[in-house]
Length: 620
Image 1 (cartoon, helix red, strand yellow):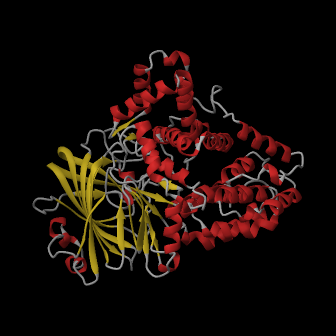
Image 2 (cartoon, rainbow, N blue to C red):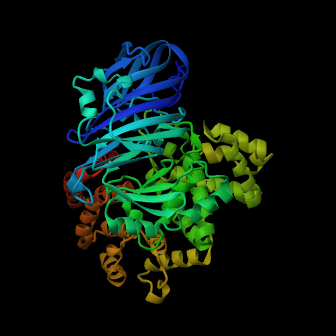
Image 3 (cartoon, helix red, strand yellow):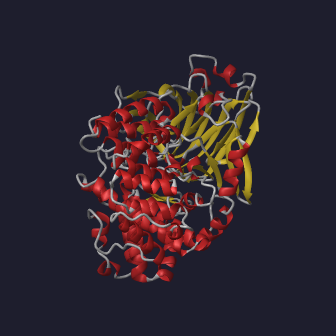
């Protein structure tokens, strides 16, 4: 018996699931989903079948045809990373029906009460299943090696609506008897009456293309939308000001899709809709196919937030079409997507913008090398993650080192040849999950002799940054870095030097400043440019990090406000680390603990866990 993924109980000798049919009843009063799932396997199977679960109550396991019970066991305790091992015993079955309920503590789900939403009137719930959280929504082989199609019936209060990373088929009243095929009699309450109660509505969705479980996604709330292109709607809570701002920010989406198709081939997902979530969403964006999830912090008012959309769009080819086989090969998703994003940005927003983007990434990569200096395994592209929680080792390394590797290949063989290589790579492996060896073999077959020109093993299995990685060069980039170096000599940039700067220029400037400075200098910089008040969180958080590391306590109130108003881990992680890292930080540690205690319930469970692990590492 051999697992195929260090983060899953899935066994290599068991057939993989190819289709899942779901029936989901949302009970907002208890933050619970009562549900059933029919898993269809690639081939009939006799004997044990291993599935992943976390925080699920398993009511019964049945033969879907006869509704007779099938034997199952659930491990008595949780594996701290993988959750609970569900073993179902099959007798030449090709499908299995599992009746279950989620828990209010599901790691994938955030249930928001009305006061936590923009409109303050109705509750809201959404998923974040990457990396290994789909198992807390439904039992599954929760590994990207298992690609599934799915159908879902979502039963919700009539005043709410649902979106999913799937095609919307219908919104209709519940139908008596439609849950019988899902073994609804297995609950210890009258599921049929709940399903068909007054004031409920059923939304039907179908995903006909095979996707890894981490791309399963839905959101339910009081939603509205704006049309922004022939394939794109922007959804958000039904607040006109938010919908209008999002529509303006992402008005150029169709042009980005067209450029993506020119570079990487046809867009295979039909729709490219966007959902702007409440501020607690823990990531900048999540590339769920057909329905990208976004943090509201990407609405910056100058269309620069579209860069996050470019990244999630690029995933439509690299990540969603071709997927890493497991999280140890995460760079195949993110390195390729970062490269593809910058190619799209270069065409749509210009070369200078793409170079700034690369430069910010270069600084971030160097900072990650410092962060992992005691854990060099995390500085590799191909990593060993046995016994590691992917949320704890999430970093910019797979993004930025992966980008640098692909950029290095492009420089070696030339852009026209590399463009042809990428198109062939995508066409060859679309709708497959692959590993680093598969990519390298394909590279060597299609670019003969490349292994003599580039040390492929050093790039993929070596630690640190290879010597042939490349800091970008442009006059704008050099000017910003030069001004940052002058800050170390006590010089603040003049107004005419920064007159046309946008958020990215300021972000690059701040990233290149010394980690700490004289408090008076930090105050003077802010007095002139009001960076602490920036509407662009990339700028604001970079400045607040400088303020904390410079012990400039004038800004601790702004730090607290920021930690309480956003849940995006890109901002939480550096601010909490800055507060608790280093000696003589007693006052800052007390502040961090108090703010987290007060803000914790507004963070997604994934973000809660990340902050708690930061505190544990630094003895808070």
